[in-house]
Amino acid sequence: MPRVTAAAKRRSRTTVAPVDVLPLVLTSGWASGINAYAVVFVMGILGRITGLEVVPETVQRPEVLAIAGGMFAVEFVADKIPYVDSMWDTVSTLIRPTVGAIVGYAIAGDAQAVDQALYAFAGGGSALASHLVKGSLRLAINSSPEPFTNMTVSLGEDITVASVIALALYHPWIALGVASFLFVTGTILVIVLFRLVLRGWRRWKARRESAGVISG
Image (cartoon, rainbow, N blue to C red; front, side):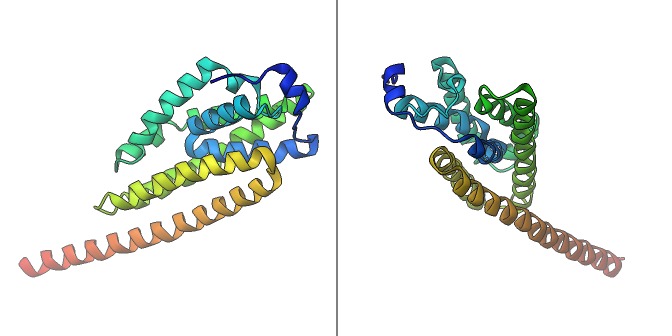
């Protein structure tokens, strides 16, 4: 894939104003908590194609794109297998927030050291929050014996992450609004689903105890 030259970048200078850096960091952090490799890969590819200056040079490097693309392919499969996805989430507990922090730091660019640290913290924190919601949601969904719900949710996550990251590069505040809505919705779903699972478990336990009393 041909790389956009530095001269072309200067001619098509499209950047995010300093005031828009924070929503981009928070949005990329939220997306990293769901699929960190997709964030790096999509952002890097778009940076190479469009020459957007807001995309850090780090994520556009060929070796970074190769690693992110390969790991995204692995996660694409693992994330759609019941229980395997939960194990993958456990392994990713440190990876996703770390990637969110690194991307946030890179987006900060030439900001002062204190600002870079704050952006890194914001990216990592939002990634950890969305990661916990995703992991909890998957645990609740895995209580269902059929695999199709899991596959549908996973595919929806992949499409959503790619779409929101693309939107964030051009309209960071709108993307942050979308990410915030999805985060709140996901949190509510986790609470509702876990209550349903807990209620079902209590009913199953009560039936089992009743059967034991009758047989005894």
